[in-house]
Length: 135
Image (cartoon, rainbow, N blue to C red; front, side):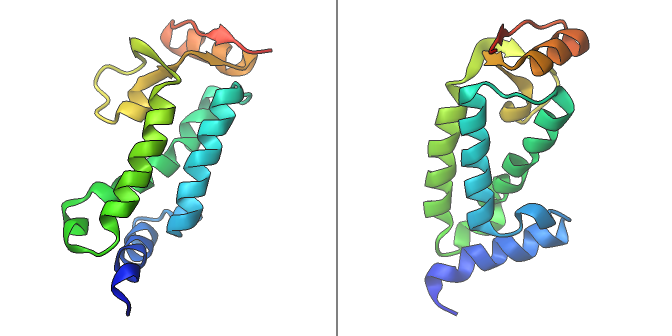
């Protein structure tokens, strides 16, 4: 196996073992995270349940930062790509606003600045937090 393919294969095996079949392909997971961020940039149009479910792709990508990945060729390139995407997503979040204070995963704790009417209503109902409504 070529050195450059060690991390993607480890990721695939680990994600599949954890039950993340939808995102057990690294390229698919990276594209899904990027597409989700694009959707949030436009104003996420679905509800809170769907939003929370869509965040699971970032949960899977956290494998890139696992200590086990440190020794694998290609892991640092993936980490760099995830950090770039994370920077785009962080820019969409309301500064200092947290939906779930005990949540350790920043992408789950943070709150978008704006979203579609369904997400905005769900967020206000569930957490009492307002967001700009994108029509």
